Length: 359
Ligand code: PEP
Ligand code: MN
Image (cartoon, rainbow, N blue to C red; front, side):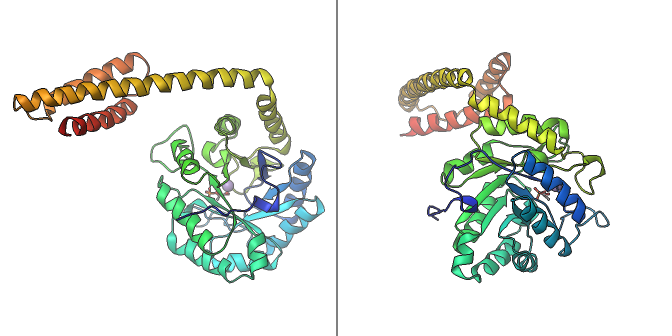
C-alpha cells in the first residue's frame, strides 16, 4: 500500500524545527506536577508536551495513570506555556475523551501497536471525525513491543486508511528476555528499514524507553540523531525520583536542556560535517569495492558450476559449506566482526553462488 500523501506533523512546515523535540513526563500526576514541568520545559525551548493519562502497566496495582480527569490538567499546562499537548490513546473511549478535552495529537503505545484489533478500533474512531478535524490531528505510532516491522507498518497503514495524514512513527525499542544494557533493545536496523520502506514517514526516536535509565538516554539520543531520525521524544519530570512511573529514565528539564544543546553542537559543528563527508566518501568507495568483489566471486562460482556439471559433482556440498563458514567466522572474529553478522552475510552469498552454479 502507498503511504505517500502525508502532511507535516502538527501542521508545521516540513522540517521547520528539525529535529523535532517532544518532551514531558511519563505520566500526568497532578495539576501542579504537569504545570511545573511544562513551565520548566518551555523555558528550555520545548514546544511539544507529552504526558500519559492512561498508563499501560505490566503489573496490576501499579500506578495506572490519573485517567480522564488529567486531560484538562494537561491541556491547561500546555496552553499556559504556549505548548502543544500530546497523549497516548489505547482505545476509542480514550480517543473520544481526549478529543473532547481539546487534544489533537496522539501517540499509540507499543503494546497497542502490537494489537491489530486495538489499532483498528482507534482507526475506526478516527474515521468518524469530520474531515477537517481528521486532517488536523497528528498520530505517532510506536513500534510494537516485538521486533516485527510488518506489524508496525500494518498499524500505520490502518491509520492512513482511516484518513489520518499527519502520521509519524516512534522507535522505542523492542522487548527482549535477558537484555541487560537497554530496557528495550534498539535494533536500529528495524527503524532504518522502516525509513527505507516509507521514506515520507517521519521517524522519531524515544531514547527514554530504549535506555530505561537516565545515564544512557543521551547516548541513545545521539545515535538516533547520527542516524538522521526526524526527532526525539524524551521523558522529563521536575523530580524524577518521585515520579509515579518510569522514574529511573526521566530527566530533569535542565538535564534535558543540556542534552539538546550537546546534540545541537554536534549537528552544527562544521568540522564534524566535513569529517562526516570524508567518512561517507570512504564508505562509498568501500561499497563499490564490495560490489566488484561480489561480482568476481559470482564469475568464479559460474566457472565452478560448469566444472561440477562436466564431472557430475552435486552443486551443494554440505561439508564444504560447513568448513567454509567456520573458516570465515574465524577470520572475521580476528577482525572484530560479529559471528552472527558474518553467518548472515555468507549464507546470502552462498545462496546466490548456488543459484549462479545452477543457471
Ligand atoms: C510511554 O510513552 O510512557 C509509554 C508507555 O511508552 P511505550 O508504549 O513505548 O512503552
Ligand atoms: Mn514512560
